[in-house]
Structure formats: structure tokens, C-alpha cells
Image (cartoon, rainbow, N blue to C red):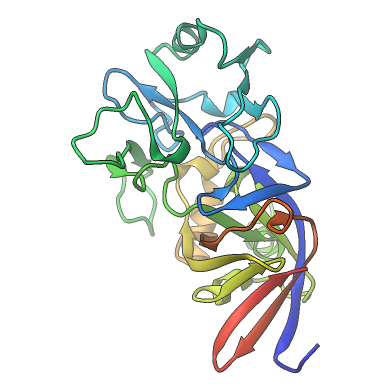
Length: 302
């Protein structure tokens, strides 16, 4: 290892969320495409009254989305149509999108007329959009009355990136060092991965409890020999981090701590600069190394 290379940690967990704002699935391995982790946020529920995407960012309208779980029936494969998705309802009922009555069941459960739509390849057939191909979806966000947020006690609309159901970037990365720091700052808060919904969790080996991934912004994350992720910016958090899910309680202190101590940011966003072939672009749990050359940094998963 050269003097310019510094070991930063180890990738310990991968997460994919097949349906936007539902509980996702933990993975041992997956493929990376230019759209992110294969199948991530590939589906969403769309409110037929407004054509907006259902999002837990507006919990007064969608209070129970975290009581739903989504997983693919079989793992998705690069270059192939998306496989079916399995949804477990709050009462334990299991549906698949192959059922002809799935939209009726989901609408009855949520008390709003919704459809389950797919965003594969930017070709979504239900959402009406005045924009040319690719289409653009929209969603709503509630901003709690809390110091440090851009808005307070209001609901705003926002556009999702063209042809996708992502809120912002295609990949979200979070380190255990950040979670450990937040736990120090607010010991009674349960700062668990589930609250923050990242795709890649990196366990820091430096022993430092701090927001270490903030220093990776502007750098490149290399996975294997081909895949490259550009770390584009911090991930500003929202009301979703405060919501109850399973045994996690409602806790505004989670968001308040991030606002007070790191400008409301927890984790970083990334975009896929280069995907990989299935045999070369497969993510496995491994190590992250930070490399600096002439002021530019790279992180490698080996």
C-alpha cells in the first residue's frame, strides 16, 4: 500500500428498496448499473388523485408506508426485465404485482386510490407528464417545525430525477462512524441504519466517531475493476428519520441532532459514473481504501 493510500473501512451491509418508501431488503451481493443498485426504487405507488408518488416524506398523507415490506420474487438481472415484487402488508398478507387486483388491495389498505408503477429504464406508462421522454415524477415533503431546516411546518412539492423514483442521487452511502457520533450526541436516540435507508453501509476502521464520509465528497468510489461511484454531496435528512417503524419509536430528536451538529446531513449521495458487467461489477462485502493523488481522492472496494 502506497503512502497516498489510507484504509478507511469495510463494507458491511447492502440495502435495496424495490418500492419507494417501503421497508427494503438486505443483500449479500448485487449488481451496479448506471441507475444504481439493480432494482433500487424500481417501483413506487402513485396517488391517482394527484399523480404524485406516494412518499413517507409526507406522513400525514401516507402514515403507514413503513408498515409495508417489499422484496423481489427473484433477484433482478442486468439487461433483463424487472422480476416481480412481493409486498407484505401490515397485517401479514403477502401480495405480488402479478395479481390482477393488487392495486385495489393496496388502495383499500392505504385508504387512497393508488397504482403500483415501475420506472424501469425511464419508461413509466401511468404517470402523466408534460415533459418529453424521459418523464418526471413528483412527490410531497413535510418539513417539521424544527430549527435548522429550510422550511418549517409546511408541505412542499419536489420533482424526482427524470425517469426515476429516487429523491435525489441514485446511491446513498453511510458510515458506522457517523452513526456512532450521532449516538454520542444523543444517547437516548436509536440511530439505526433502518432510519436512514442507505444502500451501502461502511464500517469505519479508523476508530474516529465523526461524519467521516463528508470528506469523501468530490472523490470517486471504485468497486472492483470497473464500477465507479462519484460522491456528489451530503445527504440532507427529513422527517422520515423520525418516524416509527417496527420496534423503532417516533423520535424527532433523531432529525434535531443531525440539524444541530451536521447541518441536517447524515451520509452522502453518489452517482454511478461507470457500471460493470455482472461478473465484474458485482459488489461483495469488502474493504474501502481512500487514495489521494494530486489532491483528488478515490475509494476502492476490494
